[in-house]
Amino acid sequence: MAEKAAPYLRMKSHGAQDLGSIEVAPEVLEIIASIAVSDIEGIASMRGNFASGVVERLGKKVHGKGVKSELSEAGLMIDVYCVVNYGVSIPKTAQKVQEHVRSTLENMTSLQTQEVNVHITGVQFETPHTDEQH
Image (cartoon, rainbow, N blue to C red; front, side, top):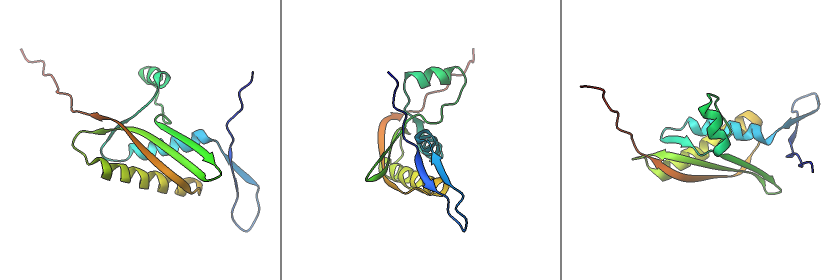
């Protein structure tokens, strides 16, 4: 059976002329949100799945990992799954993530987000560096 493709977000072009419609794939919104999250200081990494981990180990960057988008009648909802660095204020960092994701999506797509939910899935501790001195 063929899977149903995710619906594209449709927008009308703005301006004096009606040039047609613009369609944005949900994956594009997830990539934009993921890049916005990685800009926030205190975020160690984004949570991915097994497949994205394998792809990253092969040297490719996976931009949409750790972000899930959902479009409903209520509006656009974004869920962000991330790991924070030890010692940062989780509430302040999560709020920065919410604000930055919302503003980045609005600036790039003109879409208003209904919710930006931040899920902290772990804390990254500093790993001690081993010196090879004999």
